[in-house]
Amino acid sequence: MPHFVELQPQHLNELTAFCNRNFELHSGQFENEILHHRIFDDPDYSPDHGFLLRDNGTTIGFMVGVLRGNEAWLKLFAVDRNRRRSGLGSMMLAEIEALFQSDGAERVHILNASPYYFMPGLDPRYTEAFCFLQSHGYTFERYVHNMAVDLTQDDFDTTRAEARVAKAGIQIRRLEPEDKQAFYEWMLGTWSQHWTTESCNSLNNTPVTTFIALDSNSNICGFATYDVTMFRGGFGPTGVEESLRGLGIGKILFLRCLRDMKDRGYPRCEIGWVGPISFYAHTAGAQICGTFIQGNKAL
Image (spheres, rainbow, N blue to C red):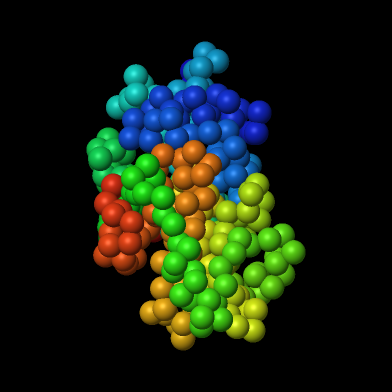
């Protein structure tokens, strides 16, 4: 008889293998470390909102969610491909929706659980998941895109560009642990809480995976971050103060991240939840590699 087991860190080996078997579009991208960061390191995560579905000692499905205030998210879920279309997904969804509702949730969103997310929405190529959610009352609202850069095709050198902006007093360097407080305050005062959390999480990476721009007064005026959302090689967020846009600072910060990924042996960068598609296409030859649909359901 299928039954629920609370998801715990000791299940990560099992969960990683299960995800790589059952997310065919993302096979090989799931790692224990990434699952731990995106699930258990999320300060809003509650053990009530993550579980495995087991039958005779074998995991046949899982579902992980998170509640932020009165808004909830399905962060990640799957049923073993050999056990689909048998009501197991419905069983898990009914369980987590009831838990969310009892904890005060008024709405459940699909996958885009920023600032700790795997995907910015549902990839509709997962057709069974699309039909499953639609049949259970989820409505789809808008599409967002990811873009990919082949890191083997360029050296992403920024020497000349950095020399040019240096004439305007702009310096580019890696964020350092001693910058933590100043960076946090600048991020929170300039950008959103979610971007602040995501980018500051880069200070937990070795090396730190954020590059910053400093103005002539040594104040932070721009940033670019990678490996804090989605999977390994995921780029974003990034931004430059409005008064300094147009100088090429954002381009340099982006390219510094690409170069850093290349130096670490990454073959590919995936830019998540892209806004300026033409910028990334023109700057690094990025191509749209995935389209995701965001939606929700009122409880």
